[in-house]
View 1 (cartoon, rainbow, N blue to C red):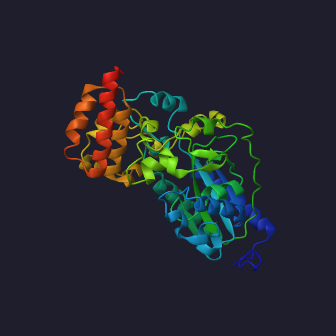
View 2: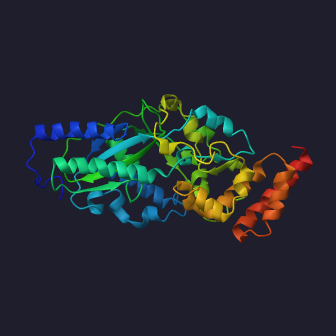
View 3: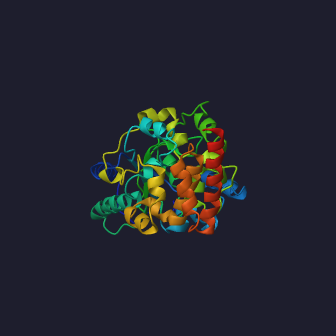
Amino acid sequence: MNEETQPKYNLSDQDLNELVQQIRSWSEELGFQQLGISDTNLFAAEGKLNDWLANNYHGDMDYMARHGLKRSRPADLIPGTRRIISVRMDYLPEQARKAIALLKQDKNAYISRYALGRDYHKLLRSRLQKLAQRIQNQVYGYNYRVFTDSAPVLEKAVAEKAGLGWIGKHSNLINRKAGSWFFLGEIYTDIPLPIDNTVEEHCGSCQACMDICPTQAIIAPYQVDARLCISYLTIEYKGIIDEKLRPMLGNRIYGCDDCQLCCPWNRFGKISMETDFQPRHELDDVKLLKLFNWSEQEFMKKLEGSAIRRIGYQNWQRNIAIALGNAEYDPEILMTLQVKIATATQLVADHISWAIKQQEKNRAEGS
């Protein structure tokens, strides 16, 4: 089905407008902070995606190219799709200034704020499914598909078209009243709902996110080279991290929030009321050594239901080893690294060996 095809639903414009108002009300009841509706024309975003892929900025994320044009052509992914309902949900568990202070505590772990609690995928998907079912009760037999970062969907481009915000220079979606600390989710549907207007961009001449990026991964406004991005390196990348980049990771062991922490619009960021997004196992304020000493069994059990667990124990150890190498000299850190290297996998041992050298260097320099 395309835009020219006659809809199968006998709904007047008034019916559709009333339905949208109901959908917005239901979404608020289900804990979403905003909902917008867009058409399926993502050709502008498709061009940008193709350029990004052609420059290999996606690194080892082969899945970004695996599905061809389905990512930017919703009706190719789900035949019959005419509209996309896009929602956002705030996730920030605490004031951002606490995160900024944590980045300066080099013996403590920094974990991206979105991953401190339970895995958001299940929560958002469940809420979106409930929203979709309420719509189905109103419009029997409509076709839909729910997504939460779970399929080839250009969710930020879709949300931008739906008026939830604009894509900033760091490539994250920014909302004028809520900053960027939120998750996105979508419902693809064949109901020809009225669409929302896009909003103006308000980054202006600001490039704070570009200036603060530890690895300078934002190579130009709106262009991120994932191969340099700390979030990519600590989450998506499975190999040996370039030695030149390791000092820039600091104490960041899972993800990076610097570009959001410095964004002026995030002074409007809202604290999440969702209990599932609250920190678990003191991950918002925990010593690197404590996490490094977790066995694989402890890692799997303590991080059950967490997005972090998907990177696997080996990359968890790799990331922490780098952070320990970046910490101020501490005899306990050095001793722990020396003990751990004997039983580490080759990948982890490479990073532990580097960390040992860094600790020894820091000791010699008296830092």
